[in-house]
Amino acid sequence: MIKSLDAFSPFIPSDEALNKSDLADKATALTAGSSKLSGQLHPKALETLECYMRVINSYYSNLIEGNATSPHEVRAAQRGEYSKDPAKRDLQLESLAHIATQAWIREVNPDMKQVFSTEFVSELHRRFYAELPEHMWVIHNREGEPAGKIVPGEWRTGDVVVGQHVPIAGGQVADAMQHFCNIYDPTRYKGDKRLIAIAAAHHRFVWIHPFADGNGRVVRLMTDAALKAAGLDSYGAWCLSRGLARSSSNYKRFLHNADQVSQGNYDGRGPLTEKGLVAFCAYMLDTAIDQVRYISGLLEVHGLRDRIDGYVQARNDGRVRGMGKLKPVATTVLYAAFIQGEMSRTQAIELTGMTERSASRLLSGLKADGLLSDTSNRSPLRWEIPEHAEPWYFPELAPLG
Image 1 (spheres, rainbow, N blue to C red):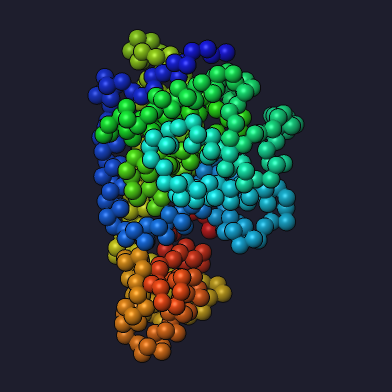
Image 2 (cartoon, rainbow, N blue to C red):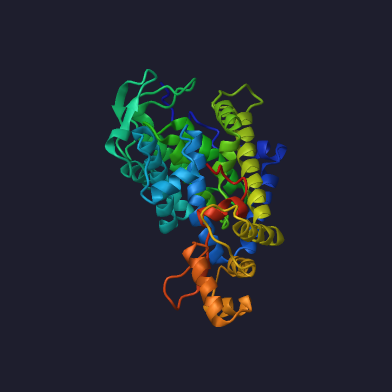
């Protein structure tokens, strides 16, 4: 088994490798795209999107691990509607655990120093598994037989083989993770290097395989938190896991390739391949840029207004099952609520051009349908994304069934 804690170096591509690559350009493009998206969104609208996207992020991160529970099934579980099939119910619970952990990250709002700490990483694992029933802590071998039990938040102590990869010995994991957090301490990296280091850390975490199980979900949650803390303020309106899941074979291939040993004097100075690490970082940054562009396109001003209008039209010709008709002016109200994040009742009534009584009836209907929300009779009206509006607001974001 591996003895040296430097066995997973290089920890970040060398300056020489960076100069020969376009990683810095990709990091700059990601920062610029994320900033532009932030500028498109009112903070209240971003908050609504972040809450909505937790289900989407959960779906795609779990999908990578073989849990194909659809967003529709996840939202049913959020309402307390679970499958009668015990196995499917467990998968719903797994999705809810992921969402709850995301909500905790949002509440804590960690900075980069916190994200790259052993306390935070182990707490991510503990919180995820603490949300699950204990029978889901059992680890099974390839034959499907029980082979151990997860202790939430505890580092792996046994030796494992993951496919063709032999991670660091169980007895060294605690030291390796402390070394990992010291290496990726954000004070060591400035500018574009910070995002490149986050991408590199994603692979090196998987290489260490610090937990008996749940490493994939935890590293993606950690990377989510790191990207947000690194200053990508729009993160949460878009999610990396969607891109990773949609190119899952590439994700796993780049992870595997970065596991390989150095291919000689022209492949960096550490035990592991620098070229493989550069390629993995490029893949991660490209995937993030693609997701920013995708969500930015969905939220583009005129396009979203057209889709909101398409939803209202679909309501009126019966294509939205179980929902009644809406006045065409509902498009104006809903779109204004998105642009502003929230708005006063007075403004909403004025926008309708209707009598106060008729406008109040319309607004009550929009609230009842989950399209707007409030916290009291006097509070502002906030834009929302109910499940029945998803296919029209955000087509192809995730499966419908």
